[in-house]
Image (cartoon, one colour):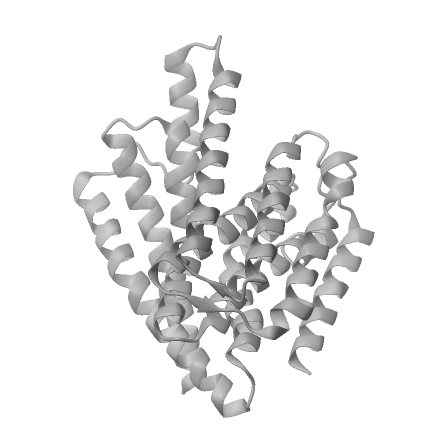
Length: 319
């Protein structure tokens, strides 16, 4: 029964997160917030809402292993699994997209995150540092995106941007926007509550730490939407933007989720993170260098390597 409750919590989280994104995006566009700002802020935060609620709930329940394991495990899964499995289906071409700047921000965030972890606790000071880096990165991204749009016709560009924003629907009625917001805001804490409580009970039953459950069950579960989206795109031969999506997701996981959760409740760092898991996450991040700077395609050989590395990591964590 506890496994069913965990799955139910995960499903509610994912559906509620999707509803919140749709409602918030269309509300923001309706009140006149530019599509560019919506894409870089509302969508980014909204798609990370399930992970954020899990980390906050786990921190408040004094199971920091789930909170930190969710983020560290998700970042590792994003690189090795979300890029690895789709690459087995179709080659992902990275040469058309310049992700160098966002990758360097993600890498800097990773090093800062690891440095803060060696303090032994993520507290309000850690949260402020991480959120400051995120704020600077967002302001810089907005400035860059605006500069790229100069010289284009404003009206046509705005319409094009609005169509590209995830969850945008210019025809959506006001009552439907309100419904999506209510479902999202009500469902997220409910799903997080069910998943964290179930994950904690599973850890106790099987005699493993909450950190292990966070790194595996919770992390894989919250990475499923990105994996499903990328696999579907690979089948349609449209997964070339997956690398940029993974870099952005990992940056938000480290800076926004742990940053906000640290302000709400302090989280002690398990010794295992310092000796193994953080370095695996860093190693996975460094594996992206040839794709980011040398513009190498992510082909089937790399798909096999990345997927095998992830399987090996999970087996090592569980043993």
